Length: 200
Image 1: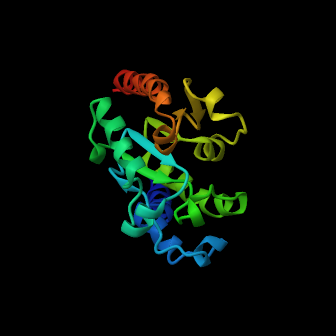
Image 2: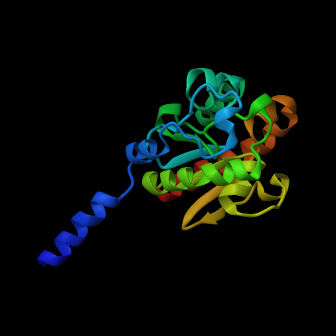
């Protein structure tokens, strides 16, 4: 390899994102008003950062804000069961949110809040390079796919995010309010399972 190419590769490696460099850049974030509205801590993505499967939700809730980990409350326990239903374990996947700070009262993140935080999950996706992303709920789906279509119409089919297959489905918190939707999520997750098997 010519010396110029070696130097170019080395320079690219130095500027390439890592999970650590993304977190360092986020720091004690004050990019939106959520930092001053009662958040206890920033909740970063967790799990296997070389996973074939990544889950992206909307924002932390009270339990997540307390523990500093995504999806650890009742919705998180249900997400763990969903992951296990397709033969995986929670530690086999990567889990994150569009927003890293809890909105007050667990309201949906506002557009300026998602705009401030969204670039970081997109950069994490580029680092992880999953084969499939499951977006949980409308906020996550709309922010990743840049559409406004209702989640009920997006779910059930794969969408494309720069060559990565994306399956929108209902958020586990919504399933706790409307358990009848679990059947639809199971249908979505079977498609995810089959897609992962076909990609291996």
